[in-house]
Amino acid sequence: MREHNFSSIEDFRGYVNTSLILIVFDMVLENHLEEFLYVVQSVLDYVCYLRSIISLLKHSQ
Image 1 (cartoon, rainbow, N blue to C red):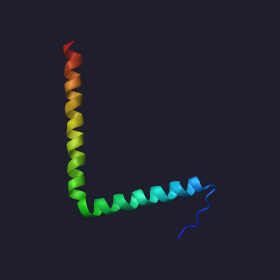
Image 2: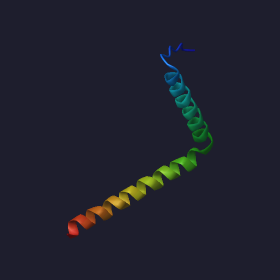
Image 3: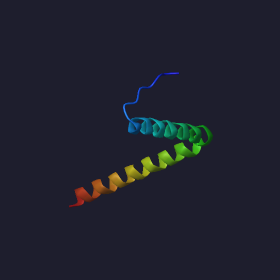
Image 4: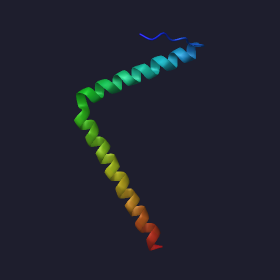
């Protein structure tokens, strides 16, 4: 285990918050990876769709 030297309580809180976020994210991905990847793919598809619409609108003017 690595030793940490925190200069303030805020540094310690930031470290704890980051650690907890990473632990929860790891648990979610471990149990729901397929659903997570589906959501990511859906968001990327939607962004590409919006970009194509914006591009069409720019060219039609």
